[in-house]
Image 1: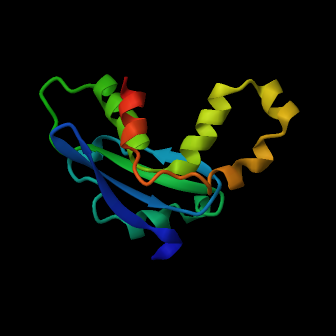
Image 2: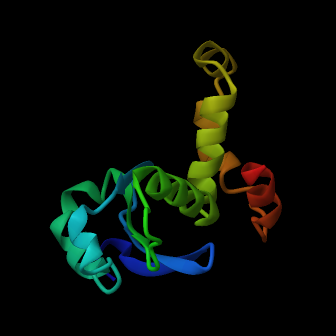
Length: 141
């Protein structure tokens, strides 16, 4: 597919959230659709979005998340943020999960002194778990 474009879905509570990904960059870009998402989710738009936003595909791994399919009355932006956070942790993006964890665990000075950043490509390729459930349970706690 064009720029690695693909559609997927993730279970959020008792429903699912549709999302698409494309791009091969080292950085992550998350795009959140506006109100139009209430009319149509991103399901089936991976190729179109990858084409529209192709200028980002070299530098970024792009994620476009819809809201979950079943919205409760009173659902607000805090609920949307919580669901998006859950979807991103459960999406299995091990590479960015490890890098984000390192960047948030250690100080800037420590990362520079120990020169860990150059090892990110290696660290993110080794030790990848077969199952993220242990991590997800602990992250939710």
